[in-house]
Amino acid sequence: MDAIQQELLAQVAGLHEVPEGAYNIRANGEMAGRNTTANIDITTKEDCPGIDIRIKPGTKSESVHIPVVLSKSGLQESVYNDFFVGEDCDITIIAGCGIHNSGSAASAHSGIHRFFVEKNAKVRYVEKHYGSGDGSGERIMNPTTEIHLAEGASLEMETVQIKGIDSTERTTTAEVAGGASLVIKEKIMTHGKQYAGTDFTVNMAGADSSVNLISRSVAKERSRQVFRSRIVGDASCHGHSECDAIIMDEASVSAIPELTANHIDANLIHEAAIGKIAGEQLIKLMTLGLTEKEAEEQIVKGFLK
Amino acid sequence: MLELRNISFQADDGGKEIEILRNINLTVENRFVAVTGPNGSGKSTLAKIVAGILAPTEGRIFLDGVDITEKSITERARMGISFAFQQPVRFKGITVKDMLSIAAGRETAVSEVCSMLSEVGLCARDYVNREINASLSGGELKRIEIAMIMARKARVSIFDEPEAGIDLWSFQNLIRVFEKMHQEIQGTILIISHQERILNIADQIVLLADGRIEKVGSREEIMPALLGAGKPCRTLSDKLIQ
Image (tube, rainbow over all chains, first blue to last red):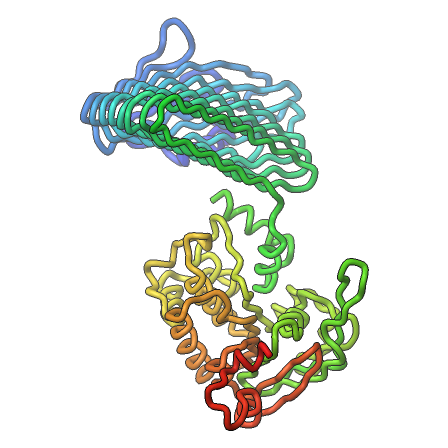
């Protein structure tokens, strides 16, 4: 891998060297490295680009890294990755995509990830998106995530997009069985003329299931963001979604929540707050010696931390 | 030394100019100075003018002989003026440790943060990584606010009604913190307060009424007049509300 690709890997997956455990690194549309372990198998799909990751039941304290980097301007790809997580696992999956575009043609990556998480398994899934390069070509990422949680399973998903992606449409759907829980934490910052759309649809089908969607975002300059969330409660369940956005300059942010309760014990809540940085927050930090600009940066940094 | 010369402040009230402060002249040299007076007498406005949050309509402000009237909030903070808000500000994602580091002007170690928090009576480890948000009570926020001011090691530390919005138990702790600060602080504390127990710590008391300074003196001079000689049942709050 060249220096640009290595930098992208460091940004999206925190990788400065070959990771321990299972991994599959994809660079410019091709496999750049793979390792499997006794408990985690990775195989290439035969019918479409992508991989299957199979994690044996009972696997604990192991991780899988599957980062993707694109440094070839104009490359556009869709990749299908399926995760099969066995019963009683407790694992961490680090994904992420970095695009470096120094040309004039648009580069795009669409990662379609499906998670099949069996009974009582626990998954932490981290996905970072990052763009760099001084070319005029757009850097586009459209991740699709499909989650199936069996009884008692849990998945915590953290997605971060802080810099360099011109356009993203993130679609996440989930089906949550009885006693299962899903937590999604999203952090996005857009600037320039960037666009970020988020679309969550979660169906809680089983008793005592829960979902918590938390989105924190900052929209600067003339960028646009749209947050959509649909939570459906078909059983006794608890659903919560929260969209908290700081809007700056001439940016635009929309939050469009939808809650549907189909059961008398479905307890569903949505909270949304969009606004500029509070003047009193700026003043407080200025009384501690920061300039207005430094105060603003500190507030944004803390908000997205 | 902080010096206010002919400070006046007018505010717009629906198209009508109202006078909040009128021709305030005050020299603050003592270590612990309390500004008191009835609601609406201009105490908080005065504090905000010193911190640079509000600009006076007329008059000049000097810090150790330097005219700081045109200085911004940031410049004044860097010159050694710090300000604790009456209602502490909350921040999503910014932790107690982050804020104390900002206040100190450098990265602070966990042990140092613990020490700062212990100074204000907080069980330190429990708070270091807490966000300064709605999960903290009013009393906790007040004490963290005071810890920030102490971390700045300011020449003039201004507290705007630190007793506001806290319960009796937290207030007792707050008094202990101020008593300790009175003993140890190197610069000047300027505290806006209605509370007799805080005024009783002060070296100097400034009584404001209707935007003017009514009296300035030591606590021995001012407190009896405030409480009403020979009327032991009367409280300071009763007096000020009148």
